[in-house]
Structure formats: C-alpha cells, structure tokens
Image (spheres, helix red, strand yellow):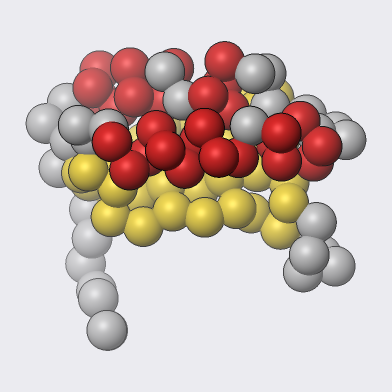
Length: 94
C-alpha cells in the first residue's frame, strides 16, 4: 500500500532542518520502509524549505507512523504538523 506523509515545519525551522539534514538522509537510506519519492516542500519563493512530502510503500499505516516518529527531523522538532493518509495511485506518466 502507498501512503502520503505531508509535514509542515515550524515557522523559522530552516536552520534546525539543515542541522539535521545529514541524519535525516542517512535515516531514509537505511530505513526498512520503502521511500518511493520524497523531498522538501517549498515556500512561494521556490527556495525556502517549509516542510516535507513522502510517498511511502508499507504494509500498514502503523508502520508509516513509526517510520515518521523515528525520523531525525521529527526527533529534532522540525515539523509542526504531520498528516499521513493512504494513497491510491491511479496515474503514473513517467
């Protein structure tokens, strides 16, 4: 099953995000949960990072919740809000 994880940062969290970026990348690379695609959400200036978006593949939502809770960005308090939803992929035009 696919899941979307939509995370919005606390205001002014860019420095905190950058301080934990390497740990976050290492975590994603070694996690059991498969990341299909991920990246930062950007402000309207197309540069300032304001959150994260993940498309994950997992057996259960509980697995995704645990994956998100163990992320270094979460542990560092980068994210102000996290929303996790099952996702039914209908179109992939790659």
